[in-house]
Amino acid sequence: MGTPRHPSLYQINTRVWLTALAQSLGRPATLDDIPDGELDGLAGMGFDWIWFLSVWQTGPAGQHVSRTNPEWRHEFQDTLPDLREDDIGGSGFAITGYDVHDRLGGDAALARLRERLRARGLRLLLDFVPNHTGLDHPWVDTHPEYYVQGTDDDLARAPQNYTRLQGGLGARVFAYGRDPYFAGWPDTLQLNYANPATEEAMIATLVKIAGQCDGVRCDMAMLVLPDVFERTWGLRPEPFWPRAITRAREQASGFCFMAEVYWDLEWTLQQQGFDYTYDKRLYDRLREGHVRPIREHFHAGHDYQNKMARFLENHDEPRAAATFPPGTHEAAAVITFLSPGLRFFHQGQFEGCRKRISPHLVRGPIEPVDQRLQQFYDRLLRALKLPAVRDGGWQLLECRPAWEDNWTSDCFVAYAWQGTDGTRVVVTVNYAPNQSQCYVALPFGDLAGSEWRLADQIEGAVYDRDGGDLQGRGLYVDATPWQASVFTVIRRSSGA
Image 1 (cartoon, rainbow, N blue to C red):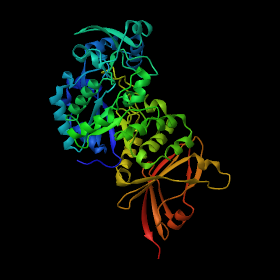
Image 2 (image 1 turned 90 degrees about the vertical axis):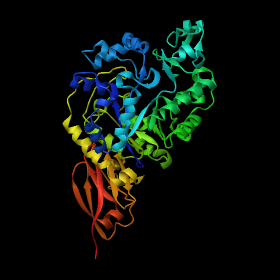
Image 3 (image 1 turned 30 degrees about the vertical axis):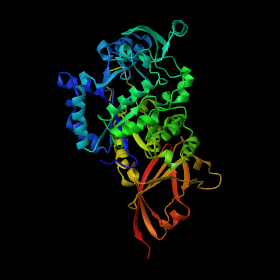
Image 4 (image 1 turned 45 degrees about the horizontal axis):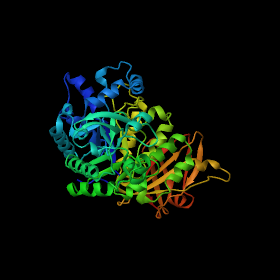
């Protein structure tokens, strides 16, 4: 089962989805209860990958922390004004074992779901959390040496980063899992990658997962890089990812790795074997709203660009509809998802949901559908099915001033896509709050001598243009604020 050069992924909050399904069924729902019609719909929308978030086993210790942490509970209450204790399941990232949670139907239900996905040409992506485990992972009893441990002094000095636990081999001070720039996550324990036995145990875990799905999204993947780990813990491990990725692919050829990664370490992880790395930098630049840094972002080499996972929201970020105003949202979406790499969408994004759902919650709020935004995403997803956009070659285009001293040409981002079958797509976005004009330099060498039809897949407008003018001056664009267009370029007739 092949995937296109530039695939699309859809992230599903599994526990929240099944809670809603259970309410309609009048009984608890498992992965087996996901309707075939829903999977048909996802395939029909053009997705290649489905990421089921938070399917692994978690424990009561993590759930207790989630329910009693005042700061987290305040966030949960903001999301669900009618919050109930049962709504707080504990973080899906405080994993106690890489077996499918029994409430979701266990490993057998996942295997059946995977087969149903495969029958529809869909691949299954799951979580892998390399940096830490839940507080009540069996290794606390059987292999406490797998974790970073501390002293009584560490606990007294930094109680936000350490805890004392009673394990099978006695009471010990353990470090919480953490990012070096923040306090520890109090529902997790930090794995010690300076211990070769820890690394080997995590590789074995990853090899097991590789038999259950088609790829993994690796949570905070940069935290186990030797330099980062040493900066955080004063211990220097051997590189983990090259060995782990090689071993997983020995188990499952073509197994896919996507990294959640920040701090400009995307290229580092790509070089260590990752297929895709988060493009948080593009997201941040789109939020800031300055078009030149956005355009310059696309000057990077194609080998780098093709491995970026482009998104406008995910479970960690605020909802796009609450972040980008109308108009800006659509423009940012066209820039993001018509660029090369992995197109990464999030459940609720198309409907214009505005409330982020914490990974600690198993129920989400009911929100009204934004019909206008949903219709936009319907058109965008249809455009993403175009063969040139899925499998073709991409390039950034130059936008020239429409006349002398017309500074608004600097407000555009423009791309071209060319399919191996000769199909062509031109994308133009005026990422500015003002009317803007430019001439877009087109890269097609055979325009002269023909009439060409440009059909906008987003707004529906159709323009007929002389090929000689297009090849000479370029495509003239006069765009309203935040206007985004995705043009198919089709030859109408040849000159005599």
